[in-house]
Image (cartoon, rainbow, N blue to C red):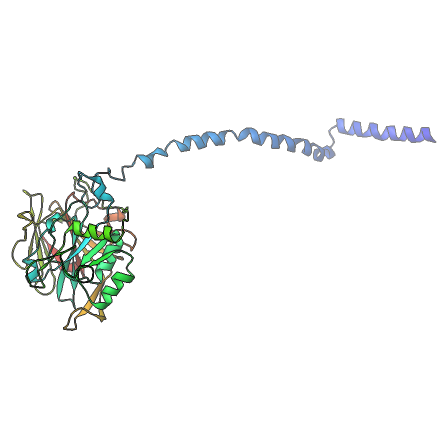
Length: 380
């Protein structure tokens, strides 16, 4: 019996060997496991090319670092001009409110030393005011200084500066001293004698108050405010960008109350000279005409503020949304460029051309003319 079982088992084994050797169709599933490990081991051998391609893709990475985005450390961020003392460029920009009614305009002083100047509508849409910003240059006299207005909040927040004015409505004073988030030097509150940080010349409230950059910086020191400044500037280039929409040697800007402005391009001076209310403006600080390398006209949303009373006549305040966006016209080198502007409360505005490519300014002083609509400016 045992011999019979052994013989039967041997026949079964012999049959399976014969079937395997004959390549029966039932052998295909058994061959699959032996091929599967082979494929799995072949996959790692194909992996080495992946690092090779990664190394090749890494070679273009120096391109972003080679782009000369940041200017040299001695180039002023808002004029594009070199300065002798780069330390100035790490100090807070100083914004000064300047009277621009006909009487105040006749007493302007020190505007040509500013890095840039804003002009904007105030007081019931009846007149304009100026705010001049000083960072790359000092000025020992700036004036006549007048009271703060709502647009000053957006303006100074964007650039991260310090504001120096002479008074304001109760509401605007409260906002500036308690909620604006930047230092505010008020001549009436912080220097009532007008002989510590400011200077008083004469008795006419429209022209007497004068500021200076050293006085504002001394107030910051006395208050223990030593904030380092680091914000992006404007892009500059001597060469005019492509894409101009035409020549523009005479620019007329309509403002209320007889405050319309005209800029005329002077090729010999390589810039635009300013006329307002008729006469050309000369800065007594330099005995030279006010000369702008760039005129930037921006259209911004204007809103009347019924509960903000600016004077004893009950004049309503005007809010201008300088931290939003709108259309713009850039004038430089006797040419005009069309585009848009964009800003926020955290960063200065960007001047954008076609395809939102930044428009480069000409090195020098810029005047930012704020209007309600682009048709408020005409040029030829």
